[in-house]
Image (cartoon, rainbow, N blue to C red; front, side, top):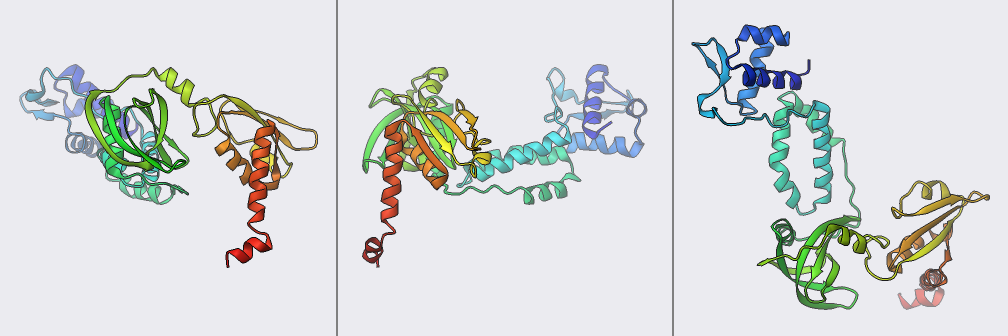
Length: 332
């Protein structure tokens, strides 16, 4: 019987029977006196279980101060493997959290996990943390004060007033929004919110927020199905607009990798006779899709629509001009 199972068993015996003798526990658990003693101490000292010894009844029970209250031992639904999985999840969240905001709020959970693993788990935990590395390239950090205010408005369903930089236009605007959900995409945080200025759902990059304050007004609630339908239909982080389908052919050298990648949840792919791979996927704004196609260089060719193929061609030609002799002389 694992330690987790023993702890749960001890708690169940005391709950159901009242005072339980040391001998009865030993017999049912089939453990040594030293092991049972350590389990009882762990329940009391590490998990805060209100267990005390009743001399008159010659058994262990919950303290009188806890009568009538429901007592649950936190974390005992997890075995040790699952607890280590939680540590892995904590490490992942920490890797997404450049300013330490999430880690700070998750620290009490992390402390409890360490308690549940027991003294012997500390060295294994440190080893685990050293052997898991999260690489977050091209991350755009978000100021912790703004991240926390957005989170507060989201959880408490309050409107948010913010000063926002629209990079494409180079303009700064003041607006009130009703937060609907946070989105983490390619190492950057975004907020899907109802904009009360434009009266529609919009997506905001949190690193472009220059000022934020939580308002007393209750947020407008938008059905999550509507949020998903409007904000998740396109390609990548871009939302809104008319949906189109792109067809891209990848050369045999790139095909083995592309065939295993998910560019969009609704994508359709097929192998061609020459070993190349054809990918079809929806998009509403060509900006990000063009960039991702360009990353494949000569290994990718857009077959349709013609406007998307032309956009990729124009970018490739513009890039090539940067390496022409005249352009090189101008940069010296």
